[in-house]
Structure formats: structure tokens, C-alpha cells
Amino acid sequence: MVNPTVRSEGSGPLRVLVYSSAAATREQVMRALGTHPHPDLPQIEYTEVATEPMVIRTMDAGGIDLAILDGEAAPAGGMGIAKQLKDELDACPPVVVLTGRVDDRWLADWSRAEAVVQHPIEPFRLAEAVVPLLRRA
Image (tube, rainbow, N blue to C red; front, side, top):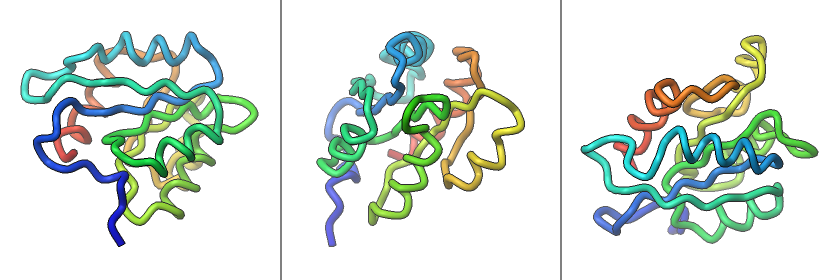
């Protein structure tokens, strides 16, 4: 079965889904990465999402190269959503989860996310986690 979530090569900008129930967190992520986090990568287009149903709908529709999910979001945390996406999508794009505490690393591992970045968002650390994943997109 073809999965529309997987990007076809050379199809323009990279599409990054940013999920958080907090608009300020979504803004922090987008500012930290900018639209061109590395010279080897195409520009990034962001899709901001504030609710779990919209994450699922957007990911099901396809075309997302990377998802950044806030583990501190409420009522649905990004780690649970990451696990659901990994379990349900045939070819889920890479997922980065944002955690509030170092002790949440085991939950991030359980979620099957490819990378974990801790709050507060630091631009260098976020880019360090995201750029290698986008290179594979």
C-alpha cells in the first residue's frame, strides 16, 4: 500500500508539522529552526497544529516530512500521539518529541520517536536533532 505521508524526492520545500496545544511553543519551535536550518536542505514550510485530531488528519493526508510533537501538550501529549502514528501509519515520517524533563526520556523511547529535545527549546539543540532527520526526507 502506498502511504501518502512519504515525500517524493525533489518535490520542493520540506514540510514540517509542529504540534502543541500552546501557540507560544509552536512559535518557539518555528523561530528556533527558521525556514532554512541548513544550507544542504531545501526551505521548510510549517504546518501548525493545536489538537490531536488535526495531527492525525494532517498526517493521514500525507506530504509531511517530519513531525515535531510537544510531549507537554494537553489534553493529548506528543509522546502518545507519536506512538499512535508509529503504530498506525505504514511509513510514518520521522518524529521529534519535546519533553519537559530529562526523566521523560523513557517515555520518548516508548513513543518510538527518532529524536528527543528537552524544553526549553534551544535553537542549536533542536537543529542538531532535526537536520539529520530532514536529510533523509
